[in-house]
Amino acid sequence: MMKKMKKILALAVSVAVIAGSFTGCGKNKEEKSSKGDNVVKILNNKESLCLAPVHIAIINGYFDEEFKAIGQEYKIVTSNIDTITEQITSGEINAGYGLTGTLMQPISNGLEIAFVTGLHRGCTKFYSKKGTGIESLEDLKGKTIGVASLSDSAPIQLKRKLFSLGFKVNGSDADIQFVTYAMTDLPTALDNGAVDAIGIHDPVAYNAEKNYEFNKILDIGEDEVFSKEYCCQAYVSQALIANNKEGAAAYARAIQKAAAFVQANPEEAARLQVENGYMPSESNEDIVRYGEILSLLNYEPSVTLGRETFVASFKDLQQTGDLDPSLNLDDFTKKVYPDLEGVPDSVVYNSDSKTFTEK
Image (cartoon, rainbow, N blue to C red; front, side):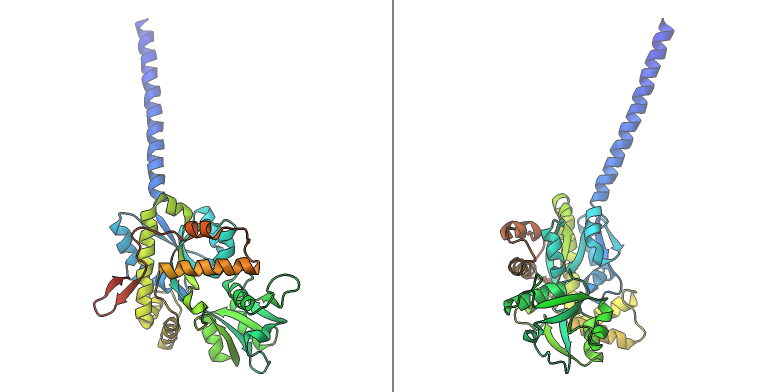
């Protein structure tokens, strides 16, 4: 009887040990998963000049500084900036950088991201070919405009502008029509007469202006309204905001610093991009050209102006019919452009002292 009791006791102890070991494994896995969830996964894309702030934040160590200060880690995910909906949804990334206009419709349709700061202004331009009689935006009525995608920020921006001029911009009886080509093919399409005008982003726009006989009919960096808006902004996932506000704020601060550096030192930023393999170059002339393009864009970051860009875009796109008019602007703004504790409205880079001043 005693032997039987000892066997039962031994079996019970064994079961307890085994159960305990499973519980322990589960706990360790959960802790590891929780820690992994706090890793801020930042989208990067090579050979994209206007992503200079991401490249500079990596090269100059701004991501290192900000995440070390809060005791967290970050990971750079090099991927395609055109697939952020899938990447955010899958959790592949939770921080990135994109065109405001391109992101407006996905956000209204449920894309779970929140903007954290405006980064730069002025990267989109619209051209017609000289000698075609299209000298201004008003001449686009009844014309076909080539764009890289119907969801790209170029048609979104143009719709906003033309609507303000009295154009009907959506529907079967719209005053304009859009057709799509690869971005780098758009200048050739215009030159060959396949389209009446094109909407393109730098550096393709900069190169087209140098190499073709085109009229620039709209430059958002020079337009009275659009020059005050951010074409590109930094964002994080809503999940990151909910679960790791410190990480979201660290990303915002680092990317602001990098943008401020680019604003103060465009050619130096271009040189660093080339030397570190983020932009292709065959000669020093490429660096000079990249630097000139960056200098033509306004990289002064701002949360306030970034939020104002979102609000203005939202209102206009509800009027054009590109966003559901029943959506509540205030609710969307609170969710999509929140205030993050510890993030300044803006920063300026002081080249002499190599320091930053918060504004």
